[in-house]
Length: 263
Image 1 (cartoon, rainbow, N blue to C red):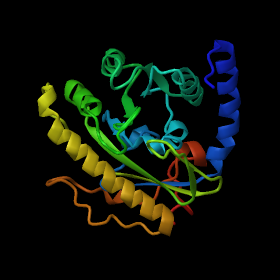
Image 2: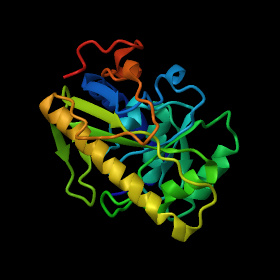
Image 3: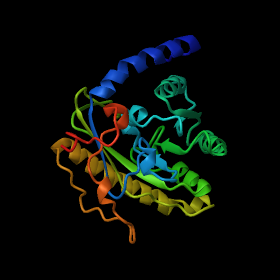
Image 4: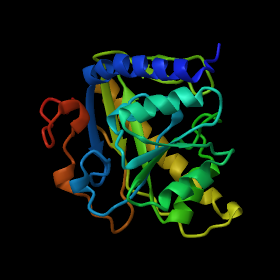
């Protein structure tokens, strides 16, 4: 049964946000980059970088809270459930853009990008909102090509979780579960590519996402970090000072303290 009444949607979003906050805070979260620090909760480590963060749709539960910031825009679909998701994401702190990869989503992102004081980064699910599962659609790389913002593949893994019986097997980690996040180096996309020229970059993003997701899933399952043979692009410097396991500032409440998160 779909919720249509705006007042009911607002009340539901308020209740859900209050219920999920302690759930998120119970998670044993750690992030580790394969090259340099790239996620958005410590802007001082990003310099002037602006990124499109790409992660698989099934792992949206954690980034929807952990990396919610007003300078980061996310795309919420136009379907009937989108208003509830939009209200919830807004309560967590995201800048919400309504649209989808097939119904005005890219145009919406481009409109928001014109006001750089509002949106610095974007978070997108390349296989959303309806799949196919773990297949990168053209929207993410099209946006990268039009904006000049590189794509950061972000992988998540949960040690213990519940999975939905739907197209993406949406995953929700159990409270107190170990949760891990891994990024590979940003993927630049040449400017103003035509639609037929996007496919090689879709494959690049898809392959990179598959790898960082596998690294994160194994790290979460075993407690041991293994890059699984990852090699950064030629000429890219790996930053050793960034290679420790970082907790999320939003969950730990203090920057730079990774105590107890490495396993």
